[in-house]
Image (cartoon, rainbow, N blue to C red; front, side, top):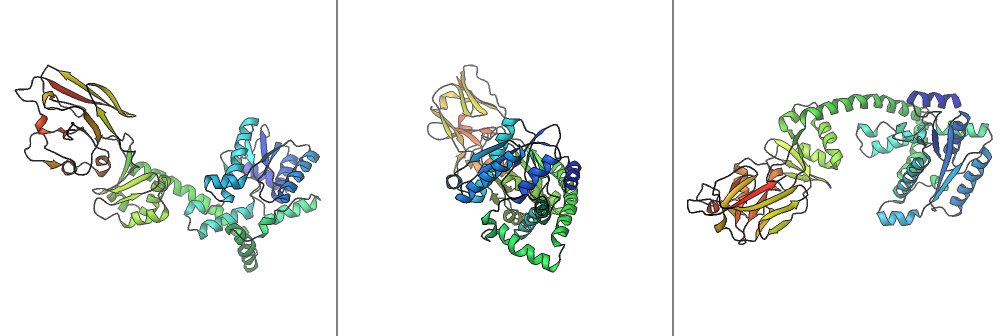
Length: 448
């Protein structure tokens, strides 16, 4: 048993004999076996136990057991007590999720405090099989079908090479007792249903089913590596970063992918999943997006953090809008409008027509203060410089082929009467232009 675990640790480079390692010790068969095997293999270990106060006297029994075990083995132990139900209610998560968050947060803090290298948890092969089956039943992609990883950051799992039966037989052979969590025998959650009903039925049908599923997960890990490399290359090649325009109040960048590139990929759905899932789009949304790629410009999809636009032969993803704001400008000076956007307003008797993407000059006498800086609103109209008829700002931007992403945060400067005098980064309104009778100019600059 020790040799099997040692080989697994070495193959995956999980532990160092020079470092300190924390063993998550619940008192169950798996964690007890992990503690004893790592000690026998000569690793420097300390134990950590969490009492979640969920099972009354049974929780206290578990804590007393692990304390006695560590005392007998001369292993230092650290303990933490949590009000798990209160945490779950406060954070609006399930009891299971609350316990998981509390446990791993405590382990990581303890690891840092002790200067330990790793946190060793006692997941075994059957746990990995149950996880794979859960993900399969929930409609997971390839990343959910590779079981449990031997290493995830500082968390390592040295017992993934063993089955639950092997662990229990090992403890029986050395006369070591352990505690049993009574909730594991209640089929109230999906994992317990799989463990208590599905896996035993599979073993009846094919005795080596769990072992074979674990092997399949190993094969899929190799497929996953090839898949990830291909997706990384495709994302690098086809995703274009879009920098915000001068006139955008939102300075965060967006990303775009051309429809033609998507259509030429072996699987556009796989690409979309890898691109959009980190941006909190759900699997159902991604399938819907894949089905609507040929739709007309203007279709949008929103996640909790991002918005996707179908925009003139491309899919554009941008962070969700920041709260719209407006700022009154009572007089000349420099004003900070957003975190990365400021404006300078200054008067000059040197009458010159100046125009750039980031500054303009207009006739001061035609301007009524206070001015306002804001993002464009539905119904905004102006007469663009050099034209005679008014035009909706949104139509003007469309004619200029400004994308939906840029239009949503386009800035304007208006006067006291609400008239648009500058569509920032584009044009001034014709009525505020400099003429031969102009005596004083107002220069407006956007500073990024």
